[in-house]
Length: 427
Image (cartoon, rainbow, N blue to C red; front, top):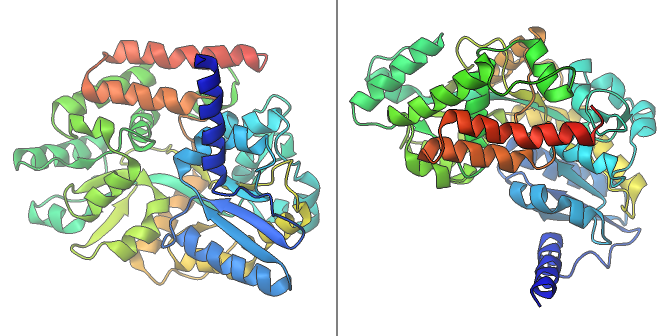
């Protein structure tokens, strides 16, 4: 009986992920698109325009768009893409644990021929192609094209300029200065950091701390399996111990363990916390939603490396019923018009015209990204190396926030799924 209940629950989850009614009525006149960007985000704005242009250039074809949650697609994609409910094209996370895993399982279409024919391989800089290609083990950086990114991203520091000025705090240029700034806020009774421990944001903070003690070789060993990884080395130990110390000092609340990314962003938008460490994907949305104070961004101080890469990308499921239409839609999102729309709305476009940003904050965002790329500073994301590693990172950072486990134990727990995956990919 228990097993039967589990099967019924699994089926219900699959139907919920696919949306009421499924996609059984999909035919040659319908392109089903899934993505998880907010309508007022830069990507949401640009892709809505892409849908209009697609329908205008394909008379008689309609786009059926379904907005999904990041967590929803993250957890259900393997089931959905291995069923008749698969969409024609969807936004999906990049890296070994996600696109790499699905490519290894045969659930994604090989886009190599289309990339060459349509010139996507020329539009994307070599560093941005790393997350588009996967070998037979599902390891990124070489092999066939399974994804096409049309924007880029990195983790940056959002800050409330009014709150900084009020307390005479200059923009930090070193980690010590950032720490001093947070001490000033704590002394004034303000919790400086808005953090979402229930989803991805907290692990980004942990990774940024580790990267402050790392180099390119460290990143390649961890992300691309180019050598042994020690989760108790100087970088990881510093990250976990410092993160736990930040909690003890009151830089973030221990209740942050249960906060989702959306609520983290909302708290920063309301001015409840003067600092938010998260991705550039928030930029366009914050520009529209923050009205009560002046804000901007600065790169994580002192780091040559930062979490970042090409953005989440379009993939075409092997079960797509309209692959040629899917390829056409992807191609439209790579064209100058849509790329310029992305840039205008506050995203980091990969093929826009080299025009100066109209908004000063957008210029800072893009200039900082350019500096990262030129300095070979994109270090990908901590949850990428192994399937299921996202959940391991969420659990680990939650334990650091609540004090449920000491840093050394958390690092030991993070090592386990990583080492297990090494055996799976034959290293």
